Amino acid sequence: MKMSRTPVYLIALVLVIIACSLAVLRHARLDIPFFPGQQRSLWLVEARVDFHAEGGEVTVSLDIPDSPPGFRVIMEQAASPGYGFSIIESNGDRRGEWTIRSASGPQTLYYKAQVVAVERSGEDSADPPPPPAGVFWDEPQATAADHLLARALATSSTPESLARELIKLLTAADPGQNAALLLSTHSLVEALDMLLRQAGVPTRLSRGLVLEDARRRQQLVPLIEVYSRERWVLFDPATGSQELPRNLLLWYQGGRGLLDVEGGSRSGVSFSMIEQTVPALELARAQMSPTGFAFFDIQHLPIEEQSMFKMLLLLPVAALVVVFMRILVGLRTSGTFMPILIALAFIQTSLLPGLVSFVAIVALGLLIRAYLSRLNLLLVARIAVLVVVVVFIICFFSVLGYRIGLNTGMTITFFPMIIIAWTIERMSILWEEEGYREVLIQGGGSLIVAVFAYALMKWPLINHLSFNFPELNLIPLALILLVGQYGGYRLTELWRFRAFEDHAP
Image (cartoon, rainbow, N blue to C red; front, top):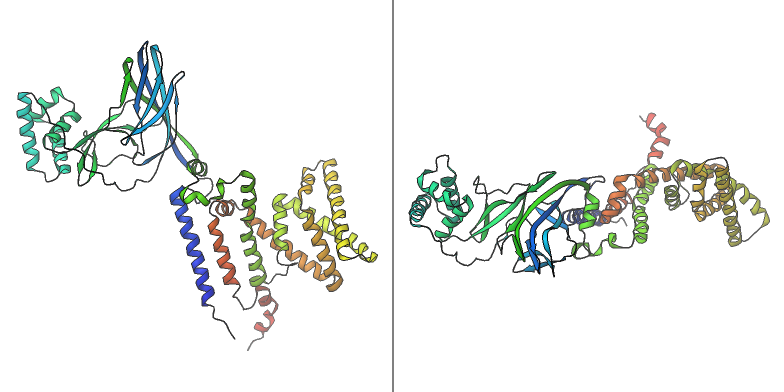
């Protein structure tokens, strides 16, 4: 009874969908690159705090970034000899705090962070802030503020549009008497902040750092955030732009203040930065934590286990090659798994030395095996003797290679002895039953399949994908299922029976 092939096709389709979905998810969540050798840009930012200690206890508190939009902090550390350092989080405010029992004279403290650019997600909603504090103007400034606010309110409908209109009035080429009066005693950000608060719009003063390679002693750029429609909207008061530049690291978002120094005076903070290029895979591993999606990741195993899995995860590719070459091409091999084992042996040596060594050792082993068959030994004893003989053959070739100055000879010592011994035994039995021609056909077929499997297993892309995206090994499994359904002529059979086609009517 002929079985329907539909279930196989459905299983193969599901396997491919699962493999691709998990790989894309892993790429998106863990930043693991799809291609080997990819590089990523990494910023090393250093904040330098200078102040003059007054001889007593000193506490320095610096606001530090916490999940800035468009960036991810992957490492941070402080350089402060003699000072204790801690990172304190309170009410959504994240600060680095240095403390010391006694210090005097000029002091310099450093905070370093490595940040990497990431895709910006949508703006999250925020809880409504408390009503804005009252605003106090001098009498002439109060009149000017009222006029400016009235003009901006007349041409706006939302807090965002009100901020844009005020920025236009304050930054116009000819700002007018009212704007000039306010800007004469307040900075642009301060004037804008006071006008918005006077209109009842909650605001938040922020500061950002423009990232440029090899820049030193940089200062933060003042920004302002306006609460509108249950979210904070960032404005650059100099340009009125709501789009955060990709090279702008939002360092400070309201809170206590950028820098607080107790026990010191004349304090200041400046920033230096440098751009580095690092391998994307190493960066992904550095950011990976053994929780969440990465809980089952094999890259958190010890190195020894990782090395073992790196080899094992290549086997599905080799199995696919064997299935393809046997079912579709029609190549005969010595067993199904023997080409895979030979390919694994080639990986431990290298292709050419491994190929030469394999042929030489197997040929010599066949001669010895032919003599052993005359002794009428039992199978177990014969194979055991063969293993011992193979050990001596490998030692001989290793020493010979070393004496004649061929380093490749030493790699023979790593050649899997059991594989060779078992190959010799199978070839010998085949010789006795089918003759030397069948040995050459199946032996040659095994070597050809092993070479193809070796080439695929050594391909850097296959190596990278099979280890970093192990779920993609479901795709070879799906292909094996599909090829297993093939019932037509093999490629070698088409070549063998080509004469029938030539004489077809």
